[in-house]
Image 1: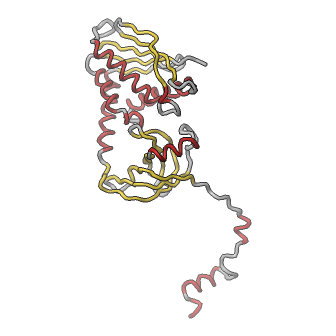
Image 2 (image 1 turned 90 degrees about the vertical axis):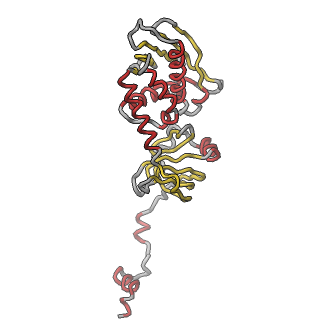
Image 3 (image 1 turned 180 degrees about the horizontal axis):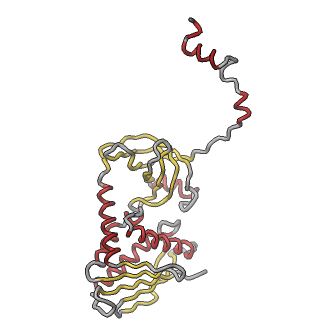
Length: 283
């Protein structure tokens, strides 16, 4: 099985030979690995991944290389770490374009600190994640764009009208599985409106759903019925659901031939049925 390693390089804002403070450098490494671990934790069993220090260079630019391993010997590290690294790379690029993924939103404070250092003291942070993938680079421009995206996401989250909620049920199709502020969540499209929002699972519900469903792919496009507390935004649209019950909705196959033979009008023609329904037969 391939060894999954990551190399992170931190460079001064005045070039390769520029000075780096000890605290900025170590804090940048720490926050970078925390974010990378959060991306990997979206995979089933990914919360067991740890990082073993392989190499640390104190020269400027400062460089650290670490190898992934699992705290659980029964967990196979390589596939989940590889997918997590690709998620990190993809979502950091999306952040620069203004799109904040749910797992990044749950680690917003860590992400903001890491990005802010790239505006003050640190000029470049480079993530070498995979030999076959392009490196992920943070510079002042991308860091500034990422900070603005995170700030907009926080403002949008505050638009939820928490005073407006009710207990009920919804029928929706799952678009993806992820987390919401560290909690298991399903992102769904409501069947009636086509609006997308997230469903946060209670600990008990997540425990029941976990053993029977793969959080990585089995829920995709599945139709579900959810009961719980429904929250609305200021426009009156559903913003999220805190779920306590959830069930799959499996369509029952329909035999069209049998349906055509069904006598639902009791032997009457459609006109006779409508006349009886509206009372016209008595005229």
